[in-house]
Amino acid sequence: MEPVFAGANLPMRVTGPQLLVGERSRRWFRGSRRSAVAVPLADRLPSGLGSFLAIGFLVLTGVSGAILGGHYETFRENYGEPRHALARLVGLGIDRITISGLNGLSEIEVLVAAGIDPKISLAFFDADEARKRLEATPMIREASVRKLYPGEIAINLVEREPYALWQVKGDLFLIAQDGTVIDKMDDGRFAYLPLVVGPDANKRAKDYIALLGEAGSFGSRIRAGSLVAGRRWNLKLDTGADIRLPEQGAGAALKRLASLEQDFRISEKDLIAIDMRQPDRVTMRLTEEAATTRFEQLKSKTKKKGGEA
Image 1 (cartoon, rainbow, N blue to C red):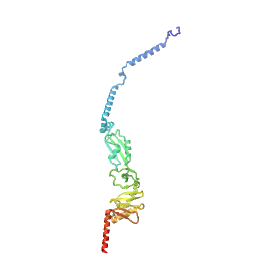
Image 2 (image 1 turned 90 degrees about the vertical axis):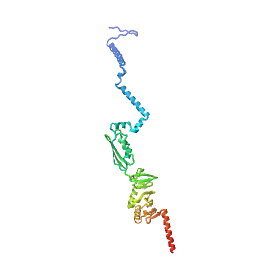
Image 3 (image 1 turned 30 degrees about the vertical axis):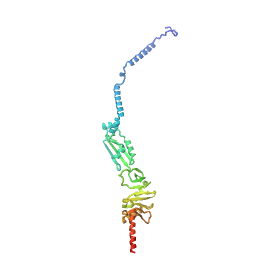
């Protein structure tokens, strides 16, 4: 039996398995540390990392130089976004566009509204965004846009139907049957539509067009209807003459006017106004020149009668 000594400065003797485990642990740790330090850094990095970093640096340098030098913007102006250019290069461009439902709009107007031009590709074309842009166009009520690979876009439209023109405060608008403004009139495509003039005349356009139906063939001589105080219509003839209709019985008054036209050709007279607001009479106002001529004629007749007397 081994003696056990106590004291701070006396050596302690340890035998058995504890010595073996401690020594092995220290040797393993020293060996592992030497092994980690001894492996070169190049051997511990992924294979090809250096080439990848070098290529990335060159690409980044090239892109930065292109942006700073203005070459990127020039490329975009000529060929569009790089992703679109690349997609077109691999065969994913747009070769065909079909548009159905066209009536008042032109193909160019639809393409511009949808954001379609030769610089985009089918792969990165956003069909849903194009549909939203089309439906934001006043003339278009509904739209659908589909991408058909490898190179086609199909657009189907439901246009709002133009019903009449409305002039107010010097501006001219295209309106629907219920008076809703479709768009501002900026060309002559819809010049054939009936024209209503004045505040709230757009809401009464349906009544005005029904009124024109009472005029028969004489309706072709009427160019516009002005709503007066929201109650009655003044009509403008192609001769420039005004027809003042009553608030009640406007259709009957217009029929009377059509009968007068058939019997006396009043549209060929030098008139500036025809007042039909009284049910038992028609008042006509001559132009200044016609009135002067008429006055001289009457004066001459009076003189002749006086001389004969």
